[in-house]
Image 1 (cartoon, rainbow, N blue to C red):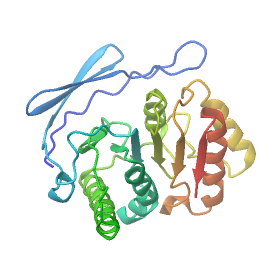
Image 2 (cartoon, one colour):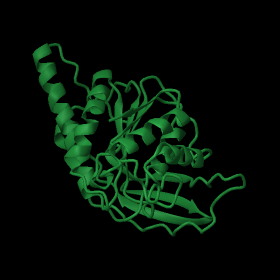
Image 3 (spheres, helix red, strand yellow):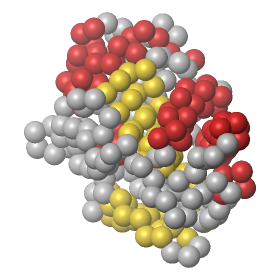
Length: 273
């Protein structure tokens, strides 16, 4: 997928609202025949991001698309990348495999969103866009098992391809993705999964750069994020905490931070390690 983006201007230094909340960045997406136009308002200024539409999924997935059946919900998979956190793409896809399998099993569409850093727009997949149902129900159980395994492998390959094309910025955190997930509507069969190592450095409430590795720091971080993330209307899973090279010495702490944040943003939330 060939992409071309214009980086939106940085938000003004003081973007907090009275009472400590942070201004949410509204995004409008207008799809046309060959180009997606994303208009992002930052401090009142409009930054336009143009991205070429590649249109089709890989052949292995395109042939499975059901055109006359509605998906049973949407599984939104979101991945935070950080250029200072080395992690093989296979680590991310291995962690997400169970979620891909679950979505395919229940007949949910799959949506992929990538955050490659705080100075870049979020990346949405043209193929895994939350509208396509990959139909793998077969009369023959052996054939169905084979096609189900092939579909899972094809989705994982598509995710790996998107991640491989993304160029991560030096700073980032999971905050924008967690906010995006909280904005999604409830729906039967719809879920959110956020892959992040929970060790952000984006100068926001999830910046843990100088945080001591103790419970008091976790409480302070979660308290600092109050008002930043709305209450979730879908079940949400946070996965990947403490799994990158920058997690050294903070592996368990990062998982505990994810688990504590879970209790603050959703009734149905799991921090999966």
